[in-house]
Image (cartoon, rainbow, N blue to C red; front, side, top):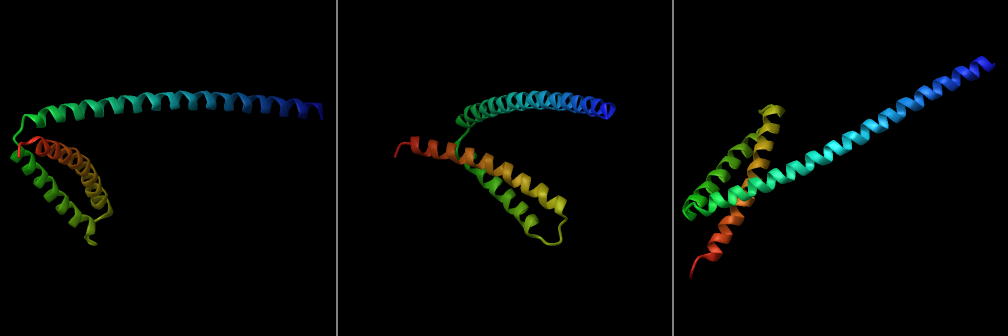
Length: 121
């Protein structure tokens, strides 16, 4: 009986050590995720700043043409999404493209609105 208890104790100690290692690993992963999220936010800010600077040098008509082009591409991908004969892989790819374009459109439309508001009457 004592041997069984000693065996159980060693087993529980090993299990406890493994759980502690798992906990430490999960904490490291959380820190890594946090750093990556911070880095991603910084990259997005940089991209937005560069986009704003680039778009500020472009003619308003060019920006509106780009907006129309993005909307047209979204319509084409929406047709793929709505088509029952298209594979789920292609639908998912189209959905991802639409989502990315919608983000770009939102930024572009904001910039267009700012430019139009700044124009003299």
